[in-house]
Length: 285
Picture 1 (tube, rainbow, N blue to C red):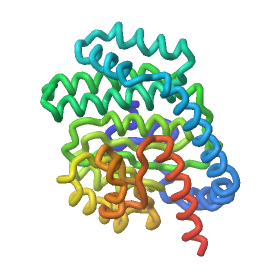
Picture 2: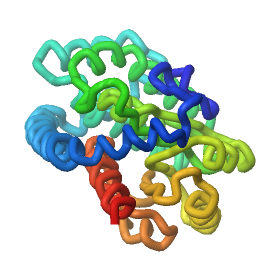
Picture 3: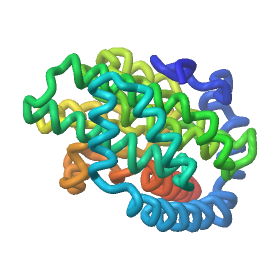
Picture 4: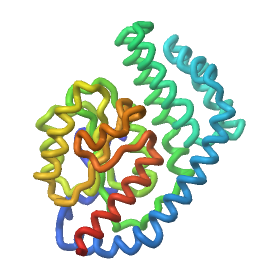
């Protein structure tokens, strides 16, 4: 996913049409498709995947995640790879591996760091290895999913962490899911402030997803979201707030000025589709 990092779109992006009349026409044609097809299909797919993955997750006890994480920390990558291979051979989908093995392992690493059971270097290397495993699975993940829109009807999302953020695993995971549903993704891990603000000003964006990890970042997040709404090429831009901070405190999304939050990538997809529908309803009134 290197092609989308540092503010550059992936291969499906067409930057020459950002905010152009032809793009606006495409967006006008997109509304009936969003209302009649995309959101119902997303809801059905999300419900189906959620139920299926929830059942699969029941087969994945906590000690499985702990064992996997310990293998990562010990740099025993053979054991970690074998564990993924075994789970997939037993029928666990790639979606479920992403959501119920890699994601909990990343969170567990964060808990080990917070409790001083691991140092910064160990956690950083562990996160890097988990992210590499996600990249290794990426071709299978995308092959198993079909975009819900046809080429030419682009929807663009900027996914970024706040300036100074140390880890980008959640950003990478979210990018995977949005690309799999046909979104053009601009992904900026660990940006500096100027880089993030320029990306908001210089690109037509339907949705801005901002990852926030700490209470101390809330004020800056609020300022950046206010900037996005004032300076974005899209005056109706939607904002999704996410990150560890919102898992137990979803009400903070409203505090920073976001339109909503989601605890996982499938939920963020559904929320983004709903916000896109609301954008077009506003533009037609």
